[in-house]
Image 1 (tube, rainbow, N blue to C red):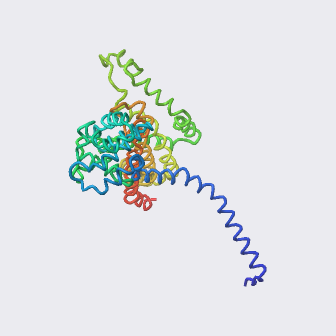
Image 2 (cartoon, rainbow, N blue to C red; image 1 turned 135 degrees about the horizontal axis):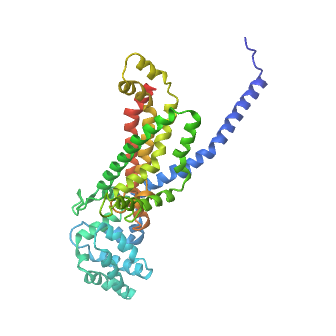
Image 3 (cartoon, rainbow, N blue to C red; image 1 turned 60 degrees about the horizontal axis):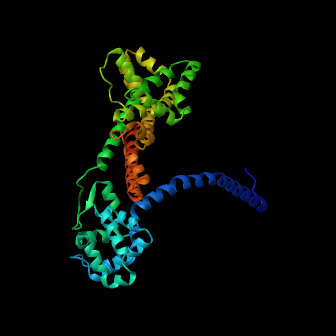
Amino acid sequence: MSATLSPAEARQAAQSHNRKRWIALALVVPLLLFVLLTFVAPIASMLWRSVYHPTLTQLIPHTLEQLAEWDGQGTPPTPVLTTFARELHDLNQRRQSGKLAEEINRSYSGMSSVVKASARQIGRMAAQDLAAQGAQALLASHRNWSDENLWRAIERAGKPYTYDNYLTALDLQMSHEGEIESRSTQIYLKLYGKTLYMALVITALCTLIGYPLAYYLSHLPSNRANLLMVLVLLPFWTSLLVRTTAWIALLQTNGVINSLLLSTGLIEQPVEMLYTSFATILAMTHILLPFMVLPLYSVMRSIDPSYTRAALSMGAKPLPAFARIYLPMTLPGLSAGALLVFIISIGYYITPALVGGTDGQMISNIIAFHMQRSNNWELAAALGSLLLALILLLYWVYDRFVGTSNIKLG
Protein backbone atom coordinates (compact mmCIF):
# COMPACT_ATOMS: atom_id res chain seq x y z
CA MET A 1 0.00 0.00 0.00
CA SER A 2 1.57 3.30 -1.13
CA ALA A 3 2.13 6.07 1.38
CA THR A 4 0.09 9.26 1.05
CA LEU A 5 2.14 12.24 -0.13
CA SER A 6 2.20 15.32 2.00
CA PRO A 7 1.02 18.61 0.43
CA ALA A 8 4.62 19.79 0.08
CA GLU A 9 5.70 16.52 -1.59
CA ALA A 10 2.70 16.59 -3.95
CA ARG A 11 3.49 20.18 -4.91
CA GLN A 12 7.14 19.28 -5.50
CA ALA A 13 6.13 16.28 -7.67
CA ALA A 14 3.77 18.47 -9.71
CA GLN A 15 6.51 21.06 -10.22
CA SER A 16 8.93 18.35 -11.31
CA HIS A 17 6.37 16.98 -13.77
CA ASN A 18 5.68 20.44 -15.21
CA ARG A 19 9.40 21.11 -15.51
CA LYS A 20 9.87 17.92 -17.52
CA ARG A 21 7.00 18.87 -19.80
CA TRP A 22 8.51 22.32 -20.44
CA ILE A 23 11.90 20.78 -21.17
CA ALA A 24 10.32 18.34 -23.64
CA LEU A 25 8.45 21.21 -25.28
CA ALA A 26 11.63 23.28 -25.52
CA LEU A 27 13.35 20.39 -27.29
CA VAL A 28 10.52 20.11 -29.81
CA VAL A 29 10.10 23.85 -30.50
CA PRO A 30 13.13 24.16 -32.87
CA LEU A 31 11.78 21.31 -34.99
CA LEU A 32 8.30 22.85 -35.04
CA LEU A 33 9.74 26.22 -36.07
CA PHE A 34 11.81 24.57 -38.80
CA VAL A 35 8.76 22.75 -40.20
CA LEU A 36 6.68 25.93 -39.96
CA LEU A 37 9.23 28.11 -41.77
CA THR A 38 10.35 25.63 -44.45
CA PHE A 39 7.17 23.66 -45.12
CA VAL A 40 3.94 25.16 -43.81
CA ALA A 41 4.71 28.82 -44.59
CA PRO A 42 5.79 28.24 -48.23
CA ILE A 43 2.73 26.09 -48.95
CA ALA A 44 0.44 28.66 -47.32
CA SER A 45 2.10 31.43 -49.34
CA MET A 46 1.67 29.42 -52.54
CA LEU A 47 -2.03 28.83 -51.87
CA TRP A 48 -2.53 32.50 -51.04
CA ARG A 49 -0.77 33.79 -54.15
CA SER A 50 -2.77 31.47 -56.38
CA VAL A 51 -5.99 33.35 -55.54
CA TYR A 52 -4.72 36.82 -54.52
CA HIS A 53 -3.58 39.09 -57.35
CA PRO A 54 -3.87 42.81 -56.50
CA THR A 55 -1.45 44.12 -59.16
CA LEU A 56 -4.05 45.68 -61.44
CA THR A 57 -5.84 47.13 -58.43
CA GLN A 58 -2.63 48.88 -57.43
CA LEU A 59 -1.92 50.18 -60.96
CA ILE A 60 -5.33 51.59 -61.98
CA PRO A 61 -7.42 51.75 -58.77
CA HIS A 62 -9.66 54.69 -59.82
CA THR A 63 -10.50 53.15 -63.19
CA LEU A 64 -11.54 49.91 -61.54
CA GLU A 65 -13.72 51.79 -59.05
CA GLN A 66 -15.61 53.44 -61.88
CA LEU A 67 -15.79 50.24 -63.93
CA ALA A 68 -17.64 48.61 -61.03
CA GLU A 69 -20.59 50.87 -61.82
CA TRP A 70 -20.48 50.12 -65.56
CA ASP A 71 -23.28 47.88 -66.88
CA GLY A 72 -20.90 45.96 -69.16
CA GLN A 73 -22.64 46.99 -72.38
CA GLY A 74 -20.84 48.99 -75.06
CA THR A 75 -17.81 51.17 -74.53
CA PRO A 76 -17.50 52.45 -70.94
CA PRO A 77 -18.62 56.04 -70.32
CA THR A 78 -16.27 58.94 -71.06
CA PRO A 79 -15.39 59.55 -67.37
CA VAL A 80 -14.11 55.98 -67.12
CA LEU A 81 -11.97 56.38 -70.25
CA THR A 82 -10.69 59.73 -69.03
CA THR A 83 -9.72 58.30 -65.68
CA PHE A 84 -7.94 55.40 -67.36
CA ALA A 85 -6.10 57.80 -69.70
CA ARG A 86 -4.98 59.86 -66.69
CA GLU A 87 -3.72 56.79 -64.84
CA LEU A 88 -2.06 55.47 -68.00
CA HIS A 89 -0.30 58.84 -68.34
CA ASP A 90 0.92 58.63 -64.74
CA LEU A 91 2.15 55.05 -65.23
CA ASN A 92 4.05 56.10 -68.32
CA GLN A 93 5.73 58.89 -66.37
CA ARG A 94 6.73 56.39 -63.67
CA ARG A 95 7.83 53.84 -66.33
CA GLN A 96 5.28 51.26 -65.13
CA SER A 97 3.13 51.08 -68.25
CA GLY A 98 4.94 47.89 -69.28
CA LYS A 99 3.70 46.22 -66.10
CA LEU A 100 0.15 47.28 -66.89
CA ALA A 101 0.56 45.96 -70.45
CA GLU A 102 1.71 42.61 -69.10
CA GLU A 103 -1.26 42.33 -66.74
CA ILE A 104 -3.88 43.29 -69.32
CA ASN A 105 -2.31 40.99 -71.92
CA ARG A 106 -2.82 38.00 -69.61
CA SER A 107 -6.57 38.65 -69.60
CA TYR A 108 -6.93 39.83 -73.21
CA SER A 109 -4.34 38.42 -75.57
CA GLY A 110 -2.59 40.82 -77.94
CA MET A 111 -2.91 43.92 -75.76
CA SER A 112 0.72 44.21 -74.64
CA SER A 113 1.87 46.27 -77.63
CA VAL A 114 -1.41 48.20 -77.70
CA VAL A 115 -1.07 49.36 -74.08
CA LYS A 116 2.57 50.33 -74.56
CA ALA A 117 1.84 52.28 -77.75
CA SER A 118 -1.15 54.05 -76.18
CA ALA A 119 0.92 54.88 -73.09
CA ARG A 120 3.57 56.52 -75.26
CA GLN A 121 1.01 58.58 -77.15
CA ILE A 122 -0.90 59.71 -74.07
CA GLY A 123 2.35 60.23 -72.20
CA ARG A 124 3.26 63.02 -74.65
CA MET A 125 0.10 64.92 -73.77
CA ALA A 126 0.10 67.63 -71.15
CA ALA A 127 -1.50 66.66 -67.86
CA GLN A 128 -4.03 69.52 -68.01
CA ASP A 129 -5.28 68.35 -71.42
CA LEU A 130 -6.23 64.86 -70.21
CA ALA A 131 -9.51 65.96 -68.63
CA ALA A 132 -10.84 67.25 -71.94
CA GLN A 133 -9.08 65.08 -74.50
CA GLY A 134 -7.97 61.94 -72.61
CA ALA A 135 -10.92 59.73 -73.63
CA GLN A 136 -10.72 60.74 -77.28
CA ALA A 137 -6.95 60.26 -77.37
CA LEU A 138 -7.31 56.80 -75.85
CA LEU A 139 -9.94 55.69 -78.36
CA ALA A 140 -7.94 57.16 -81.24
CA SER A 141 -4.75 55.33 -80.20
CA HIS A 142 -6.20 51.89 -81.06
CA ARG A 143 -9.56 50.42 -81.99
CA ASN A 144 -9.36 47.78 -79.23
CA TRP A 145 -10.18 50.43 -76.61
CA SER A 146 -13.70 50.52 -78.05
CA ASP A 147 -14.19 46.80 -77.49
CA GLU A 148 -16.49 46.11 -74.56
CA ASN A 149 -14.99 42.63 -74.15
CA LEU A 150 -11.62 44.21 -73.39
CA TRP A 151 -13.08 46.32 -70.59
CA ARG A 152 -14.92 43.31 -69.19
CA ALA A 153 -11.62 41.47 -69.09
CA ILE A 154 -9.95 44.44 -67.34
CA GLU A 155 -12.78 44.61 -64.82
CA ARG A 156 -12.51 40.88 -64.08
CA ALA A 157 -8.70 41.00 -63.88
CA GLY A 158 -8.94 43.93 -61.49
CA LYS A 159 -10.51 41.85 -58.75
CA PRO A 160 -7.84 41.12 -56.11
CA TYR A 161 -9.27 37.66 -55.38
CA THR A 162 -9.71 35.46 -58.42
CA TYR A 163 -9.81 31.83 -59.50
CA ASP A 164 -8.77 32.61 -63.08
CA ASN A 165 -5.32 31.13 -62.47
CA TYR A 166 -6.88 27.78 -61.61
CA LEU A 167 -8.99 27.97 -64.76
CA THR A 168 -5.84 28.55 -66.80
CA ALA A 169 -4.06 25.70 -65.01
CA LEU A 170 -6.94 23.43 -66.04
CA ASP A 171 -6.91 24.70 -69.63
CA LEU A 172 -10.15 26.61 -69.08
CA GLN A 173 -11.02 30.25 -69.44
CA MET A 174 -13.79 32.70 -68.77
CA SER A 175 -15.60 33.69 -71.98
CA HIS A 176 -16.58 37.25 -72.77
CA GLU A 177 -20.12 36.33 -71.74
CA GLY A 178 -18.88 35.18 -68.31
CA GLU A 179 -19.12 31.44 -68.93
CA ILE A 180 -16.37 28.88 -68.31
CA GLU A 181 -15.15 27.24 -71.50
CA SER A 182 -12.20 25.22 -72.76
CA ARG A 183 -9.15 27.05 -74.07
CA SER A 184 -8.25 26.66 -77.73
CA THR A 185 -4.79 25.35 -76.80
CA GLN A 186 -4.62 22.50 -74.32
CA ILE A 187 -1.25 22.70 -72.55
CA TYR A 188 -1.34 22.05 -68.83
CA LEU A 189 -3.67 19.05 -68.67
CA LYS A 190 -1.48 17.27 -71.20
CA LEU A 191 1.56 18.12 -69.11
CA TYR A 192 -0.10 16.76 -65.96
CA GLY A 193 -0.95 13.55 -67.82
CA LYS A 194 2.57 13.33 -69.24
CA THR A 195 4.08 13.90 -65.80
CA LEU A 196 1.92 11.16 -64.27
CA TYR A 197 2.80 8.78 -67.09
CA MET A 198 6.53 9.40 -66.79
CA ALA A 199 6.41 9.08 -63.00
CA LEU A 200 4.59 5.74 -63.30
CA VAL A 201 7.10 4.47 -65.87
CA ILE A 202 10.02 5.51 -63.65
CA THR A 203 8.40 3.82 -60.64
CA ALA A 204 7.79 0.64 -62.65
CA LEU A 205 11.39 0.54 -63.92
CA CYS A 206 12.77 1.13 -60.42
CA THR A 207 10.58 -1.73 -59.19
CA LEU A 208 11.67 -4.12 -61.94
CA ILE A 209 15.34 -3.34 -61.31
CA GLY A 210 15.27 -2.73 -57.58
CA TYR A 211 13.27 -5.77 -56.44
CA PRO A 212 15.66 -8.44 -57.79
CA LEU A 213 18.65 -6.38 -56.62
CA ALA A 214 17.26 -6.01 -53.09
CA TYR A 215 16.39 -9.72 -53.06
CA TYR A 216 19.94 -10.64 -54.06
CA LEU A 217 21.49 -8.32 -51.47
CA SER A 218 19.23 -9.56 -48.67
CA HIS A 219 20.34 -13.19 -49.20
CA LEU A 220 24.07 -12.43 -49.18
CA PRO A 221 26.31 -12.64 -46.11
CA SER A 222 26.45 -9.36 -44.21
CA ASN A 223 29.99 -8.42 -45.24
CA ARG A 224 29.31 -8.89 -48.97
CA ALA A 225 25.89 -7.27 -48.74
CA ASN A 226 27.36 -4.20 -47.04
CA LEU A 227 30.04 -3.93 -49.72
CA LEU A 228 27.49 -4.05 -52.55
CA MET A 229 25.20 -1.68 -50.67
CA VAL A 230 27.98 0.90 -50.92
CA LEU A 231 27.60 0.72 -54.72
CA VAL A 232 23.85 1.22 -54.38
CA LEU A 233 24.40 4.30 -52.20
CA LEU A 234 27.16 5.69 -54.42
CA PRO A 235 24.76 7.97 -56.36
CA PHE A 236 23.89 9.68 -53.07
CA TRP A 237 27.52 10.67 -52.64
CA THR A 238 27.79 12.14 -56.14
CA SER A 239 26.47 15.55 -57.11
CA LEU A 240 23.14 15.46 -58.91
CA LEU A 241 24.51 17.84 -61.50
CA VAL A 242 27.49 15.55 -62.13
CA ARG A 243 25.25 12.51 -62.57
CA THR A 244 22.96 14.34 -64.96
CA THR A 245 25.90 15.72 -66.94
CA ALA A 246 27.28 12.20 -67.25
CA TRP A 247 24.02 11.11 -68.88
CA ILE A 248 24.33 14.01 -71.32
CA ALA A 249 27.78 12.74 -72.29
CA LEU A 250 26.40 9.23 -72.74
CA LEU A 251 23.23 10.04 -74.67
CA GLN A 252 24.18 12.92 -76.96
CA THR A 253 24.43 12.43 -80.72
CA ASN A 254 28.20 12.01 -80.68
CA GLY A 255 28.24 10.53 -77.18
CA VAL A 256 29.52 7.26 -75.82
CA ILE A 257 26.46 5.12 -76.59
CA ASN A 258 26.02 6.32 -80.17
CA SER A 259 29.75 6.00 -80.85
CA LEU A 260 29.73 2.44 -79.54
CA LEU A 261 26.68 1.46 -81.60
CA LEU A 262 28.15 3.02 -84.73
CA SER A 263 31.49 1.27 -84.25
CA THR A 264 29.79 -2.13 -83.89
CA GLY A 265 27.63 -1.56 -86.97
CA LEU A 266 24.32 -1.91 -85.10
CA ILE A 267 23.17 1.48 -86.38
CA GLU A 268 24.07 3.45 -89.50
CA GLN A 269 23.42 6.92 -88.10
CA PRO A 270 23.25 8.36 -84.58
CA VAL A 271 20.03 7.85 -82.65
CA GLU A 272 18.42 10.90 -81.08
CA MET A 273 18.31 9.96 -77.39
CA LEU A 274 19.15 13.20 -75.62
CA TYR A 275 16.44 15.83 -75.02
CA THR A 276 13.65 13.26 -75.18
CA SER A 277 11.28 11.62 -72.72
CA PHE A 278 13.46 8.52 -72.97
CA ALA A 279 16.45 10.47 -71.63
CA THR A 280 14.42 11.87 -68.74
CA ILE A 281 13.06 8.45 -67.76
CA LEU A 282 16.46 6.77 -68.04
CA ALA A 283 18.35 9.39 -66.02
CA MET A 284 15.70 9.65 -63.33
CA THR A 285 15.47 5.86 -62.98
CA HIS A 286 19.20 5.78 -62.29
CA ILE A 287 18.96 8.63 -59.78
CA LEU A 288 15.89 7.33 -57.90
CA LEU A 289 16.74 3.63 -57.88
CA PRO A 290 18.27 3.74 -54.34
CA PHE A 291 14.96 5.02 -52.98
CA MET A 292 13.41 1.73 -54.11
CA VAL A 293 16.24 -0.59 -53.07
CA LEU A 294 16.68 0.66 -49.51
CA PRO A 295 13.08 0.08 -48.25
CA LEU A 296 12.94 -3.28 -50.00
CA TYR A 297 16.29 -4.37 -48.57
CA SER A 298 15.35 -3.40 -45.01
CA VAL A 299 12.11 -5.43 -45.22
CA MET A 300 13.62 -8.43 -47.01
CA ARG A 301 16.49 -8.61 -44.56
CA SER A 302 14.04 -9.08 -41.69
CA ILE A 303 12.03 -11.89 -43.34
CA ASP A 304 12.71 -15.30 -41.88
CA PRO A 305 13.73 -17.62 -44.77
CA SER A 306 12.22 -20.57 -42.94
CA TYR A 307 8.76 -19.55 -44.17
CA THR A 308 9.66 -20.19 -47.80
CA ARG A 309 11.58 -23.35 -46.93
CA ALA A 310 8.56 -24.65 -45.03
CA ALA A 311 6.32 -24.07 -48.05
CA LEU A 312 8.79 -25.84 -50.34
CA SER A 313 9.12 -28.77 -47.93
CA MET A 314 5.33 -29.20 -47.99
CA GLY A 315 5.32 -29.62 -51.77
CA ALA A 316 4.85 -26.08 -53.03
CA LYS A 317 6.67 -25.14 -56.21
CA PRO A 318 9.18 -22.24 -56.10
CA LEU A 319 7.12 -19.67 -58.01
CA PRO A 320 3.82 -20.26 -56.15
CA ALA A 321 5.71 -20.28 -52.86
CA PHE A 322 7.35 -16.99 -53.73
CA ALA A 323 4.09 -15.40 -54.90
CA ARG A 324 1.99 -16.55 -51.93
CA ILE A 325 4.52 -16.47 -49.08
CA TYR A 326 7.50 -14.22 -49.78
CA LEU A 327 5.99 -11.49 -51.99
CA PRO A 328 3.15 -10.52 -49.59
CA MET A 329 5.68 -10.08 -46.78
CA THR A 330 7.72 -7.66 -48.92
CA LEU A 331 4.74 -5.49 -49.87
CA PRO A 332 5.37 -2.91 -47.09
CA GLY A 333 8.86 -2.24 -48.46
CA LEU A 334 7.67 -2.39 -52.06
CA SER A 335 4.81 0.06 -51.51
CA ALA A 336 7.02 2.42 -49.46
CA GLY A 337 9.70 2.42 -52.16
CA ALA A 338 7.16 2.91 -54.94
CA LEU A 339 5.56 5.79 -53.06
CA LEU A 340 8.94 7.46 -52.50
CA VAL A 341 10.01 7.12 -56.11
CA PHE A 342 6.65 8.25 -57.51
CA ILE A 343 6.29 11.34 -55.31
CA ILE A 344 9.90 12.45 -55.86
CA SER A 345 9.74 11.89 -59.62
CA ILE A 346 6.44 13.70 -60.10
CA GLY A 347 7.96 16.94 -58.80
CA TYR A 348 11.48 16.56 -60.18
CA TYR A 349 12.93 19.56 -61.96
CA ILE A 350 16.70 19.56 -62.56
CA THR A 351 17.09 16.32 -64.51
CA PRO A 352 14.17 16.90 -66.96
CA ALA A 353 15.42 20.47 -67.51
CA LEU A 354 18.92 19.28 -68.44
CA VAL A 355 18.32 16.07 -70.40
CA GLY A 356 14.62 16.21 -71.32
CA GLY A 357 14.51 19.14 -73.70
CA THR A 358 11.05 20.09 -74.96
CA ASP A 359 9.84 16.49 -75.26
CA GLY A 360 10.94 15.43 -71.78
CA GLN A 361 9.63 18.40 -69.81
CA MET A 362 7.43 17.83 -66.77
CA ILE A 363 4.94 20.09 -65.03
CA SER A 364 7.61 21.22 -62.55
CA ASN A 365 9.61 22.74 -65.42
CA ILE A 366 6.59 24.78 -66.53
CA ILE A 367 6.10 26.00 -62.96
CA ALA A 368 9.76 27.10 -62.90
CA PHE A 369 9.28 28.82 -66.28
CA HIS A 370 6.41 30.95 -64.99
CA MET A 371 8.39 31.86 -61.88
CA GLN A 372 11.70 32.69 -63.58
CA ARG A 373 10.83 33.93 -67.08
CA SER A 374 7.20 34.94 -67.51
CA ASN A 375 7.05 36.29 -63.92
CA ASN A 376 3.53 34.92 -63.61
CA TRP A 377 3.89 33.77 -60.02
CA GLU A 378 0.15 33.49 -59.53
CA LEU A 379 -0.22 30.93 -62.33
CA ALA A 380 2.86 29.10 -61.05
CA ALA A 381 1.27 28.99 -57.59
CA ALA A 382 -1.99 27.63 -59.06
CA LEU A 383 -0.11 24.93 -60.98
CA GLY A 384 1.85 24.03 -57.85
CA SER A 385 -1.33 23.92 -55.76
CA LEU A 386 -2.99 21.55 -58.22
CA LEU A 387 0.14 19.38 -58.22
CA LEU A 388 0.06 19.31 -54.41
CA ALA A 389 -3.62 18.36 -54.46
CA LEU A 390 -2.90 15.60 -56.97
CA ILE A 391 -0.11 14.17 -54.81
CA LEU A 392 -2.31 14.29 -51.70
CA LEU A 393 -5.10 12.53 -53.59
CA LEU A 394 -2.74 9.81 -54.79
CA TYR A 395 -1.36 9.42 -51.28
CA TRP A 396 -4.91 9.07 -49.92
CA VAL A 397 -5.59 6.34 -52.49
CA TYR A 398 -2.34 4.63 -51.48
CA ASP A 399 -3.18 4.85 -47.77
CA ARG A 400 -6.76 3.73 -48.38
CA PHE A 401 -6.12 0.69 -50.54
CA VAL A 402 -2.44 -0.22 -50.12
CA GLY A 403 -1.48 1.00 -46.67
CA THR A 404 -4.31 -0.88 -44.98
CA SER A 405 -3.38 -4.15 -46.71
CA ASN A 406 0.22 -3.70 -45.67
CA ILE A 407 -0.79 -3.32 -42.06
CA LYS A 408 -2.84 -6.49 -42.23
CA LEU A 409 -0.09 -8.41 -43.98
CA GLY A 410 2.53 -7.05 -41.60
